Length: 351
Image 1 (cartoon, one colour):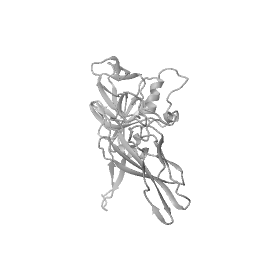
Image 2 (tube, one colour; image 1 turned 60 degrees about the horizontal axis):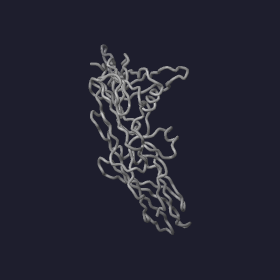
Image 3 (tube, rainbow, N blue to C red; image 1 turned 90 degrees about the vertical axis):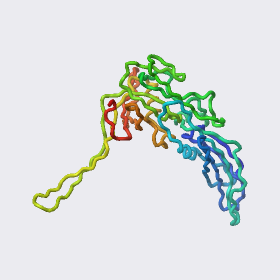
Image 4 (cartoon, rainbow, N blue to C red; image 1 turned 45 degrees about the vertical axis):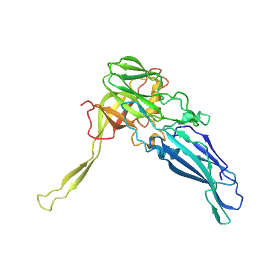
């Protein structure tokens, strides 16, 4: 049987590696092959249906091998689909158990599922991921202290928007913590408000004169929906394809070939801007809104834009090469970007 199972490094967030080590038994030199199997049984809290995933690795006597179980947990989390919200929402968490055993062959006899060892307790995980920098600066494990990375002040909204914001956990959540519910996200309407408004421990400035802004809801890097808004520029473009063909006419003096065309739908592209922001906010837009991670890369939809009161899936993108800020300029910066809509049939966002 496996001598031991241990979780060596990682966190609750399934978009980052979660490393489980298993030490193999010493079965002697007569074994023609020897491997360790790790069984991960995982389920979303919303359905309770556990799925088993088998990981295996060849080993030598007493060798310790390490498995990254985050891929299997992301597979289970894929059952959940994110969508824009209009009221307080609590997101699911994952529960999983671990067990391992040795398999080997001696003198032509295959020994399978030799007395298995259980990890000993149910473990828990959350959707989201730490950045490479956060992981690099950690000590091998990292706790979750908040579900947003937004700076504490400097966010600008208009009074016709709603702010979607996650609540912070009461205490830091460690990889060994027991979880009874996932993170909660709240919604606050800014209607009738202006100036500085306190929202979830942060300060938002509501500009009553800001009329030409777009609201976004998106899945942030910590695995929950939150909101942000941006200024609309004057430019709206569309993209699509047209393929020309030839219709051959019957052979006759007056019969000439005619052109045909096959046209795709035209999807609009909106030109937006963050407006004047601090360098701290520029880094947040760059690292959180425009970048992705192993968790969000598995999502079919992760960002939506509000147009004429309805939410539409979209993809906000920067130019491939982009100057985030220039250290010779100590003033405010702004980021211009393009929002690609995932559907056609929309051009004028203010109809």
